[in-house]
Image (cartoon, rainbow, N blue to C red):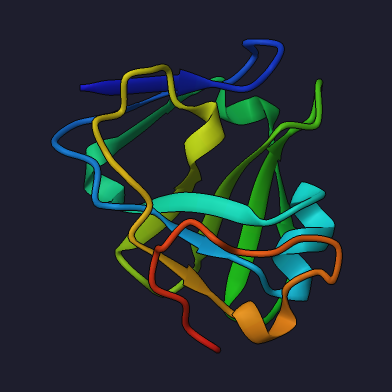
Length: 126
């Protein structure tokens, strides 16, 4: 079982089972929402329990995706592709240890110009 929370603790969550290796998304939407790039793991919906769900505010960032954040402290927690059976959860919100390592960088063609990627993790244009 993996646990995590927003900054203020109004929202906590649990994920059963092992966490899949996370990816880091460098698209402009993820950068604008998170303030840098977005690192998350994609887990089956059935494996996720959210406590304090009434504090999650959902922002529909496209026809296919909504993003969830804490209405109290603003912590960005969830990336939710509406018609899929999984959701992305921010790696920074998990309590340690997670026992995973970053698997890939995605949308690197859109990455910010203020940083370089030099961690040796595979990079994908999209």
